[in-house]
Length: 208
Image 1 (cartoon, rainbow, N blue to C red):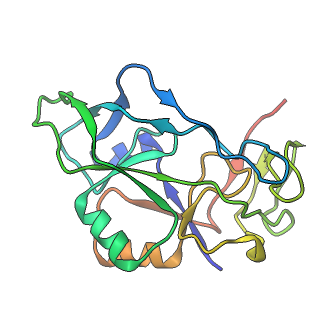
Image 2: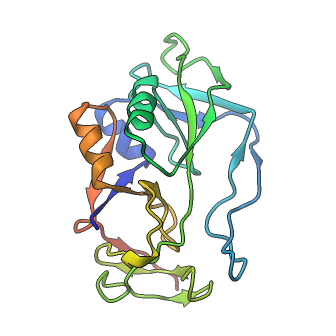
Image 3: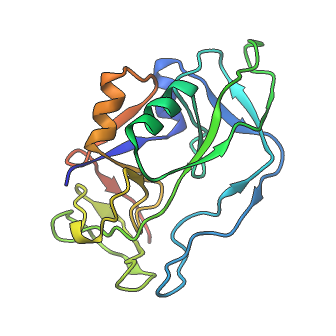
């Protein structure tokens, strides 16, 4: 199985001049997803409504991200393509978003929907990924670990549950998608969507 990393980092999206958003005010957070075997949190707590945002810029792409959390905004076109293809793994939260004025004083965007990806117990193959583990936090089932170095991404295929978008266990901040998501995105020319192939992904982080 071949995967790509969906780049939802705010600075990366700005490279093409597309808008991103900042959270306005305090966020209300829900309960984090946890491993059903050891109760270890699998990632950050989800943002709960109401959603209050400030959009920075007037060029709205098919994805709009803040670079924080698991929530991002998608266009009606993105949602139509996603639902029409029957993709799995994206929670459609809704479009009840409170926008403030954008930094460019452009019209406040409408029709954008808040969505959220989930965490999976899909584990990485340590040897094939060139993975260095600083400390394992979870159990053998979730394999939540501090990973200072990763040379590429190779998942343990029997641990994959079939989702088309998910955060793999222990790889915080990284969102994987399947080939068919990449193909649908490119064939429909969805804007402001960036992918990194699993062979080209690299991580180096200091846990000392």
